[in-house]
View (tube, one colour):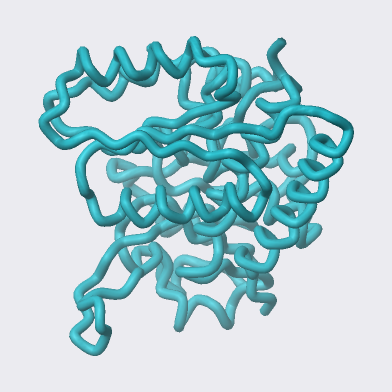
Length: 293
């Protein structure tokens, strides 16, 4: 069994990005600039945005954090999005999700200029991704592709089961694993809460990508020997032995599943670090105007 070390892979990629940024700046080019909008004080969002700011420093990017309280109106938030759309110095920006209930996340996502949508959530980027055109690919699925590539995991012709159908992970992941290129070229099955025979589907899978948000859902009796397991789940589970009062749990019963696998990603330290790393790659592409002029 090989443990997939997302932290090590992410650090190696960020070092490559930092070197490329240094070369761009040395040639008189513009330093890539990533902006983030954070609404409220959600613990997970705070941590995630803080890590994004640190990653920008590692990569040599300029970063801007714009904060609003929970009571910000939808109109005020959309006005800020428009300002960033029109700011020529900002190459890409994100609006950290989730947003307060009184704000339409979809309306905000669609208001972002797709050329600056480094989260890859805008319908134009999603559509281009689904038919294999150059675009910003959403960070978590892109991070998973990078891990598969880094470890030279064979995907062509393999049966891949994606657990979960969210717009952020499940759906794009399934689309990407079907694409006629590496990593991809797999036969993909998407399972979700209404799939009656999930265990049987998983037992046939060469690759399982678990993104349900249900701690310990994938058990040893659902995994065939030699399978590749990518665990996307990160749920806070109460744990009185920890100073924080909780621990992060993946969707896979790691302790009992790991010994059956050829490769498995842990939680934490697997997919998580790659998500922010992918955002950095998208920001570099935005700075270079790689996809859109």
